[in-house]
Image 1 (spheres, rainbow, N blue to C red):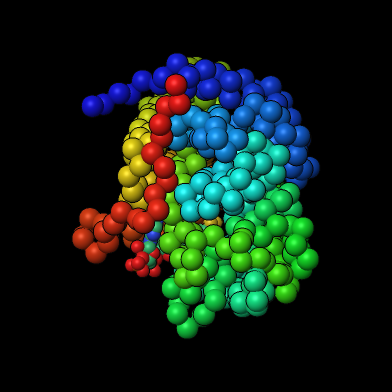
Image 2 (image 1 turned 90 degrees about the vertical axis):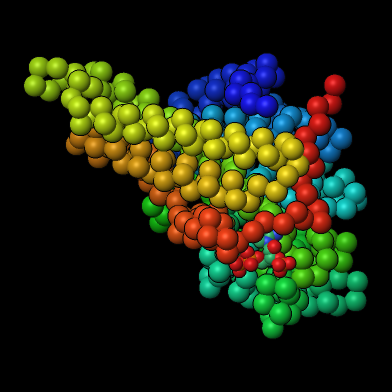
Length: 398
Ligand code: COS
C-alpha cells in the first residue's frame, strides 16, 4: 500500500501555508533578519488559521489533521524563514505533541487545548550549559516538597524562551540514577522564580528568539509532572522524535528555497556568452539540490506516515532529520557558490539560508548523533521497542 499523493485536504493546506509565507513572511524577512526582530504577530496569524495545532485532535482544540500535514506546514514556513518553522517545531512538535502523548486528561484540557489553538505558546527546555548531546547528564534539580516540587537550574539554547507561556522542563529527582532520575514538568512562565534572557550574537536565525531559562526555587505542583518520576528521559526522547520530524520537514523547505533562488539566478546570469545554468558544474550543484529536496521529502513523509499508523519511528525520523538537514546546509552553501560574490552579500537571500541551515545540523540531534544512531541501528546495537505510551495514531474524524 503506497500512496504518494496529497489528499485534497493536504493540498489545500499546502496552498494556504504557501500563500501565508508569501504574504506574511517573505516581504519582511530581510528587514526582520537584519534587525534581529521576531515578529510575534506572525504567530497570532498562524493561530487564526489553525496552524499552531494542525495535527492535534479537534477535541483538544487542534485542526485534527494528520502528522504529514504538520510536515507540509513546516516545509512552507521554512521556505519563508527558519525562525517561524522553529517556533512551530518547539510549540507543536516538542511541546504540544508531547502533552498529547504523555499528558493526563486534566493536563491536556488545561495546557494542550489553549496551545493547540495558539492562545498560549509552548517551548521545550532540555538542554543545559553542560548537557547538550549527552542529555541524560542534565543537572537541573527537582526536589519533592509536599504536594509539589522545587526546581532549580538553568537551561540554554531554548527557542522561543522569551515568548513561551509554558515550558516543558526536564529535571532530575536523583542525579545518581543518571537518565532514570530525569522527570518532566509543565512549568508556566508565570510561576515565581522563572526568568528568561535572549542569546545575542548567533550566527543565524536572527529573526528568531533563542535564549536561557533560569529556574530559581520554582514551585511546581505535582499535577504538573508529566508522566512518572524517572520517565523524563523517555519523554524527552519521544518528544525529539516529533521535534526532529518538524526540523526535517523544515529543512526540505529550506532546500527548496535554495533551489528556487539558484534556478532563478542561473537562468538570469550569463558568463562566457551563456546562462550559467548551461555550465555543467553549476548544473551539478542544482541537480544535487533537487536530489536532496526529493529524497528528504520522501523520508519525511515516510516518518509521518509511520506516525499516522501509531508505530515507533525513532529510526526513520532520525534518518530523515540527518539527510534533510545535511541537504539543506549543502544546498545553501552551493546556492551561494552559484551566486558568486553576490551570494556572499545580503543582496540575495542565500547567505541567510546558509546561516540558518547551520543551526539545523546542530539542533535536535547533531549530524554526529544521527550518524551514530544510524550506524548503531544497522549494526544491531540499537533497537526500538514499542513504548507504553505512543503518540495516538491518526484517525480521520469524518
Ligand atoms: N522514545 C522513547 N524512549 C526512548 C527513545 C525514544 N525516541 N529513545 C530512547 N528511549 C529510551 C530507551 O528505550 C531507554 O529506555 P530503558 O532505560 O527503559 O531501556 C532509555 O530511553 C535510554 O535510551 P538510550 O540507551 O538510547 O540512551 P543513550 O544514552 O544511548 O542516548 C542518544 C542516546 C545519544 C541518542 C540521546 O541522548 C540523544 O538523542 N541525544 C541528543 C539529544 C538532543 O537531540 N538534544 C537536542 C535537544 S533540543 S535542541
